[in-house]
Amino acid sequence: MYLSVFDIFKIGIGPSSSHTMGPMVAAARFLGLLAASPFHARGLRATLHGSLAFTGVGHATDRAVILGLDGVTAETYDAEAAESALARIRRERQVRPPGLGALDFDPDSDLVFDYETPLPGHANGMVLSATDAQGDVILTETYYSIGGGFVRTAAEMAAGGTEEEAGAPVPYPFHNAAEMLDMAARSGKSIAQMKRANEATLRSPRALDDGLAAIWAAMAACIDRGLATGGTLPGGLNIRRRAHDIHERLKAERGLNLTPPHTINDWMSVYAMAVNEENAAGGQVVTAPTNGAAGVVPATIRYWLDHVPGAQPSQVGDFLLTAAAIGGIIKRNASISGAECGCQAEVGSAAAMAAGGLAAVLGGSPAHVENAAEIALEHHLGMTCDPVKGLVQVPCIERNGLGAIKAVSAASLALRGTGEHFMPLDNCIEAMRQTGRDMSEKYKETALGGLAVNVPNC
Image (cartoon, rainbow, N blue to C red; front, side):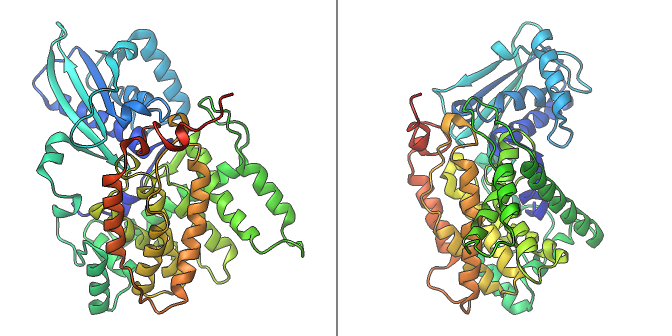
């Protein structure tokens, strides 16, 4: 299946695309499998492995699985209804997925966190099972949440291949940056134009434009909610939401003659922090390419629209298409999963996407776009994923702000040149893959190393 812009950018819920959205998607897939089976189920069980176990509570994986088995999806999620459903399930010890009736499921005993047995396919593994009246397993499936809300079964992982290797052919099937640049040179098209032509195999131009507008509307609304909301984030760290207060101070300083030029960095950061505070609070966000890195691309777009002379809202679609092309290349050839390659795969990928998109709308050539993405990714290499207490708060929220700053700097540097540069994006992506492969597991979203274990004692 061709990797669409709407696969890279998906509207979902926080705090994690791999730990919240992915398990919810897996639950929905299992319910579909159960509905199509000849078996009559009486109960359900779920076991979380690897990173899903280690940071599952902090990432609301338990809630996502319970609600998913009750039939809730990210698209239909309503916070108030979800709380009511969770209370009912814990009280009745049953879930009620549509079309399957009441099924026994006690969250205290039927949802297991297995910290000892990692599954072979990916760090984010889970096993879902259905049982009969005697408690015997009649149907089981292993799922892997591979980042960005993407889910694959054990059989799909074992079969290899990628999402791009099946489905209808597209006119510009580039699998890496070198192919992308070659096709752009031969066709005379921009990266966004090639991506738009590819999307035309799936939907009409009107549907594409409407979908892109909806993605940006969701991103912008998330920024606005984050800027308007104060208080303390859930989870026990007592982290105060800062975006609102910082934004108020920035607005008060606007127009003052003595404001230092570097204050523009605070604007970029506050837009990104607003998104990731919303994400940490379990609000609606857009994977870009993940929830943990959801603030970088929206912050860069908002900076461009609000602070760069000549920015046109009509070009936001081209920004998103270009960014999705970069994100797709990274996902195909390395990873966008923090549990697989550390935060270089999340915020690093997001910064590369944002840098490429910004370079494009500022008039850069495909070579400039590729150069901008490479600069941004190169300077995130080796970044660990070490969330304190397994929560997407420290260091994740600030890290998105710095990712946006790096993205803008990378695009600006690239546009100062001709597009020619020493290190190709493809080589940088491969370096990221190798670094992630060699990185200790304790630095890959397990909360067992790095900042996660170097925290105040009181």
